[in-house]
Amino acid sequence: MGSDHHRPEHSLINMNFVEITKDNWEEAIRLKPKRQQYRHLRGDAALHSLAKCYVFPGKYFPYLIEEGGKPIGCFRFRDYGRGVNLVSFFIDRKHQGRGLGRKAVEHFIEWVRQNYPKAREIELWVGPENSAARSLYEGFGFFYTGEVNETGDLYMELHLGDPADEWERKRQEQELFRSVVDYYSTPESLEYYRDRARNQGFYSVERAMVERFMSPPATVLDVGCGAGREAFELTRMGYTVTGVDVTSALLEQAKAIATELGMDIEFRLGNGKSLDFPDGSFDYVLLITQMIHHVPLHANRVRLLREAGRVVKPGGRILLTYNDHDVAKDHKPWGAGWRSDADKADELAATYSILERGDQFSMDCQGKQSGVFGYGHQLTREEMEAEVLEAELEIVERADFHTIEGGEPDEFWKPTRVLVLKACTGPLEGRL
Image 1 (cartoon, rainbow, N blue to C red):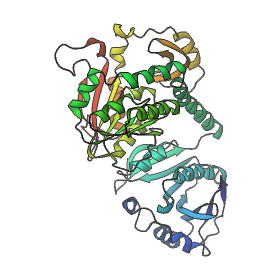
Image 2: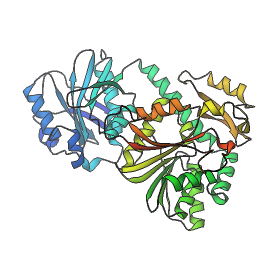
Image 3: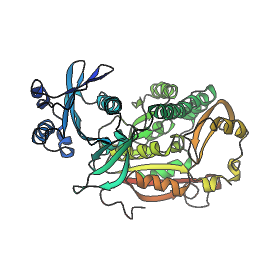
Image 4: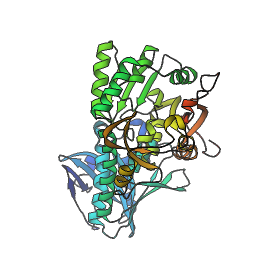
């Protein structure tokens, strides 16, 4: 099954790409994806790839993915001169859940750069319902071009720019995420959020939101759970809660308080861009307490929203809260946008080339200076709802904190909006 095209072998962190030949093809056909993944592939993934390569010699090239010398998956690609088409890719079902798919995609990109230096792009097609794969590829810079083939698959593309430029962008992006973790790990932040988790419970507007849009018993994923304030209150209301956050120091506080309260709540360290849960795991996914503002960059917020749509059950709901900057910028109870650290924050922002309109830094923690600048993004209603649409979510209902309790509007909460979302099951047009 081999060819004379060339046989580059790539090895990074104990992972190899080895061309499938007459000597190892039997190892390849023993590899199988999970049963539910067959709908995203063409029949038996390995056999289909080998058959294509046999029928079209010199057009398609099949490779084993090996870790520690053992086959864990395979892929097939096509070289068309100015780029490479990743036609088929999967990790064997016995080896899934260990992050090997992500590592293999990362290695494939570098492998293309090394072995196909003239390639300016990598292209692939993703099934419209395969949100997990789409989220995975977007994490490496692939984007949906808007093109759809005759079977409804979505065309995605990665531009292979100068590796040095790509490295610098990745470095800056990681620094932005790190700034969020550092901000919430300061003594001031930890003290503030620990006390709230122990003593406060829900704000009345939050309770009104939960009572209006949720119903126990049900499973809940709280993304950006912090020290657990919302998780504890939801547990008291009869929900089974799992909390996820990027800040390990806050999670340690959450676990300690849960033990004190005698509550059985799972708190996990994790990033909302890539949620480590199977599809359809939860009745509700919460993106509340305006956590969306602390997710750096548009593409990552869309990935978070798409991941929420993936892990919520069919018919389940996603609750999202955010502050509408068009209102918040002139909102006097919140200081109308005035910040004592604005000059220093602007100087810091000037050192980043990847920032987008609305990005900013602040060291203010509920009126106290934390000493660490953390990333934040100012969202308008138009921008927030556009990101929801791009993530293929449907807005079921809108609400505002300042009117959600009924009666006299609470002007303090005027900028805070609520979106109730569900995953789209049909055409996106008219979903907002």
